[in-house]
Image 1 (cartoon, rainbow, N blue to C red):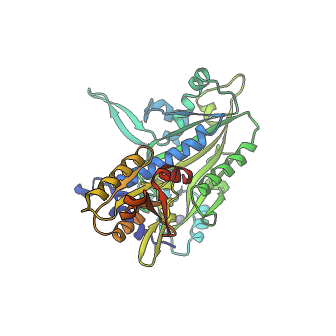
Image 2: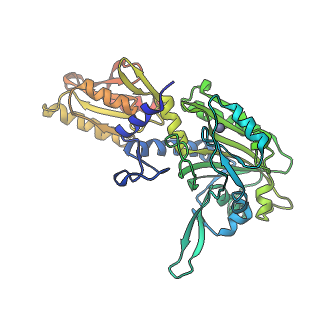
Image 3: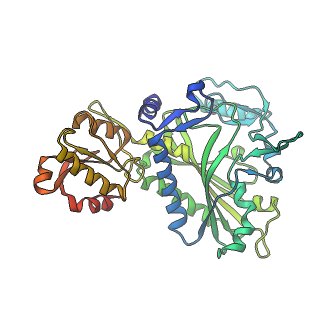
Length: 416
Ligand SMILES: [Zn+2]
């Protein structure tokens, strides 16, 4: 299995992920995404939106505000639920009620190493913010989950679109939790981005829970996750939120152990009841799929990382790769070659994310592109000037083939 350190180092070196505010010593639990990381995240979000919204007739999108009326968090139970005294396992960072000794000792047995615990604390994971300019300022919160934005807009969406139950509302956005022990690189951060679906069904309906479990697993596999590195794990009684009828995690086998990738939760009517929201003459039930964009970026990087013959290759699915095609003139000092390469580069750029490289030799350029996961490299050489063909080199096989310049755009679009 790949070492986390190798991926942390590659992420920094190749512009995927940097420590947040690094020139001022960083800030625990915050990360910045570089040029390639920003593309990777964008691709993940686009693929998710395509699968969850555009590809369906029963889901619409939403983009709610990060700061909401504090009454939302009182109704949702977040201000209260986070006030229990909790302790946290220092090995896996899971939190438990401090007063439940049986569960704590059962958990200690789950680890090979000796477990130590943090002090019992009143955790309130909501991040407070203060609004206005005159004292006393109004206290509000950065949202601790994006979910509530969907519930409070349920009636607006029903009234302003043509959805009918069963239907879903999808949303992607930032959330904030004042974690006491962020860790495992970007896995547990204080600022993170969620991609969630809230799917509303009639009371008593359970079959959508199984349906969404399978759909979400299929999505990860379709983007290149090896099924062997994924599993479902049903929540046990003690870890399931009291309102959840069923809860399952899709877990990834990370270097730091099996870790939550995405949660699929059957929330029953808990949420809409709290907000006193009804539909026709009943309170709908909700099935939720809740994934993290940052976790997905991290796990896909871990999954893609390969070392072969001293070269590092990121075998990212082409749809996720930050750069789809790199274009090289064989040499940088032959104006005719460079001109031809530039025209091919400009043409491909109309529809694809393409990069240009004329530094060093071809071998070094291949190595650099392999490390950021570029699936194809196009080289313009002397034959190109003769017969209008170029060399296309495949990242994973390193095989090269000659492709006619006029066929190049369709060659790539067929593979994407
Ligand atoms: Zn633990």
